[in-house]
Structure formats: C-alpha cells, structure tokens
Length: 431
Image 1: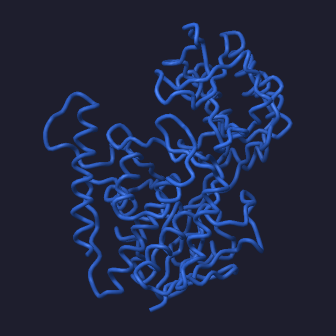
Image 2 (image 1 turned 60 degrees about the vertical axis):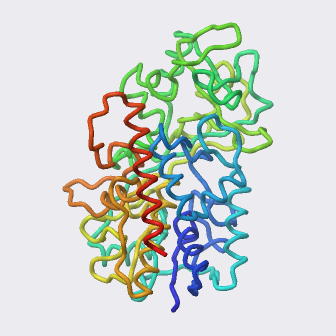
Image 3 (image 1 turned 90 degrees about the vertical axis):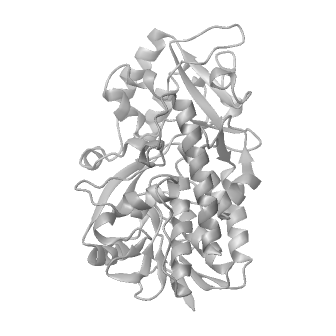
C-alpha cells in the first residue's frame, strides 16, 4: 500500500519516518530545493525558521517537556534528531538548526521505501495521504484545501533576529540562566530604567514592514511581534521576554529589565534575541535593537522576518485522529491543523501516521486520552468551538487531576506521571 505525504517539514518527516519503519511505501513530496517559500532558505527538510528552541524539557514542570517525553516513548524522529544536535539552553531543548535539518534529511533519504519527489502538489489526493504543508502552504494547494475544508484562517508569524557573539559587548552583558539554573547557557543584556524606556519608545514608533496588511490580520499570542507586545503597555515587556526576575550578575546586581540571548549553534558563534520576533524593517531592527547597551555594536547575522501562517478550521472538518471527516483516507498534520509550535507540529505528524497505519491494518484508530498532551491536542483540533484558534501544549488542556492538589509544582508532577503512564499503555495497545 502506498501513502503520499505532502510536505517535508517536521510533521511530514515525522509521519513519513513512522510509516516507512513499519514497511509502508511512502512518497514524500516537497517543493525544495527547486523552490523556496518566503521564509525558507535551507535545501534540507525540517528547516526551523522562528527559533532554534523546542521549549522546556522537564516533563514535570513544562507541558511541552511532557509532550516531548510522550513522543520519545512512541519513537519520535524529531526527538531523536534533537538529542543528536542539541545545544546548551538551560532547561530548554534547543538545537543547531543546520545539523538538525541535515540529520532528519539524511534519515529520511536513507530509507529505501521513502521516495522523495521535488514537486508542487496542487490538489489534495483522494487516496491514502497526509497533508503536512505547514503554515506556508503554496497558493494552488491552499485553494484545493479550501475547497474540501470550507475555507481557511490566516495569521502572521514572526521570527527573531540573530547576532554574532563576537559583536556582543560583554562589558555590558553577563552569562547565566534565570535563578542560576542551567549554568551559562544564556547571555543577559541588562537595561536601566532610562535605557528601557528609550528602547520601548523607539520600538513602538519604528517603521514596520507590510504594515497595512499586518494590521488586518490576527496575531497569535505565541509568536507575538515584540513591537506589538510593547504597544500594549509600556511595562508589558518587563513582564514578558525582558523580565529581570531571577537574573543577577556576578556581583549580585539586579536590573530594571533584561533581554536574554540564546545560542543558535553548538559553537556559540551566533545568538538569538529571545522573544524578539519582529515585523520591523531591517534597518529599523539594527537601529532599535542597538539601543540595548550590550548590542550597541551588534552584527546582525539574520534579521527578523514576518510571514503568513495558515490553518484550517479543524473542528468542522477533522476527526480526532486527524483524518478528514469527508474522506477518512485523507489526513492532515502540522500547524495547518491548528496545533502551534515545532514540537506540537511534529507530534501531530506522529499521531496522523499512527492512526493512518492502524486504518491500513484494518483496525480502528485509538486516540490517546486527554490525560496526555497528545490526546489533549487531538481533542482540541476536533472539538466543537465557535472561534477556533491554534493551541500550544499546556497543562490547562489536560484532564484535571482526580484529586485536589493546591501546590502547582506537585499538581504538574502528578499530571506528568499520570500522562506518561497513560502513553506507555497506549504504546502497548498499538503492538
């Protein structure tokens, strides 16, 4: 039996790998390297655009960390690649982008039963397939998807600038993670009250790219451009990505505001401005971010960019197994389904492949229950709602604990243990 997978991003590669390892013949379509979307430039699959961080790694304190552990139990390719290409990032899991994409690409191309085809697919196939074309689905295929899904929703997504390490002024910066956790994985760029106020004023007034188009779109909170967040209130950044709480230099000094930089590669030659996704024009990015004392002479290796993101109204057209209600042989996966985030996208690809494989074997798909993050995300994309919006992994979407646990740390630990026990049982049910 042949299965077509459209899109070689995180979800598509995760799905193709799962099916191929079980002997299924897979045809994997992608437009690269013949053509690139406005946000992509790497010829390899699974290019990470917004950030090199896959977010928190501790399953007992971070829901995305719990999701990662669930995926590891089920044999995730994304988690294997991340483990092989990780870079220091405190309690987070971050990767070397180029090595990560290269690892996945080599893994996919090494499988004899995966045929990679460089082609733009213009219509959704009617037979066994997984559509995992992501937030930058081509216009022709978007029209095809719209016809079978009754329309689409759009929002804009932003990525953060990257600067060279050697251009950071370390007389005005210091290493360290929040509350002393994780060693020296982050570079901290402090600001005084006056410096912060100047930066925010210039950030809010700076010239933006495609301003009128941007203002017409909804902005998903998870990738909020830093200038939009700043415009919501002068102190808003100090309670978000410029939060100084838990950070102090070697002399014990605390600061009014702090911007953190995170390694982009293992060599530590490039650093990402954490949480500074932006829609500013490139010249404005250099001018405004250089107002941060430690970045006054910063060399920008990559400026932030803004790009379209697309997702379908999944509750109206998808089942909990990610299959199309009108054609159960057609599955969707990735951000196009309304899961938000790299790990969540990969997880949906893994789930779609698991469920499709079960159908190929003549079995009814088993949905993980909502005590797991995988199950809760499945419930989110298929649950009835009047205003469907993308969803990240978070403890709030899990089934509540059966008993009252007031302490949040203890409650999260309980939910994590319950989820992992459930996902192990789920794995056994698939054998």
